[in-house]
Length: 150
Image (cartoon, rainbow, N blue to C red):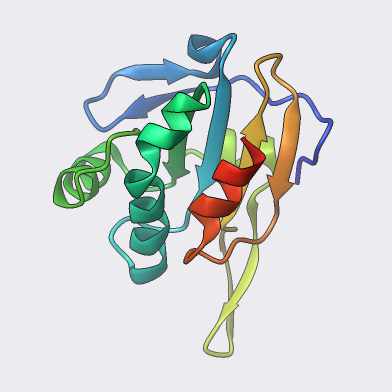
């Protein structure tokens, strides 16, 4: 998994409307890239709505939010519409960004081990360097933690 001080990898993924979005689109801005396991599940909804609820404050800090999961564009569109999410949701079913950031790994739920997206967040500075990394995120208060760093 990437860490603070590492250069954020460039990637191009599709958003919920099948538009290409690249890290290069945000040159000169801070970017909050958060990886989450699955659209419209309890923890992922809590995390997304946390970012939604303070999104104007994040914009005021000169940053944008990009959520990435392995879900497809249609799933993202439903999730974004259902919860009125104002930020980018990018589809990564081929795990381009997921693997580049090193956020795919073993997880355990209810005693079962499996591979999946590790809930994690990176704040990337305007110069493309990771200034803060959370390798393991608790969804409830995470948006406020990110805002404090910004």
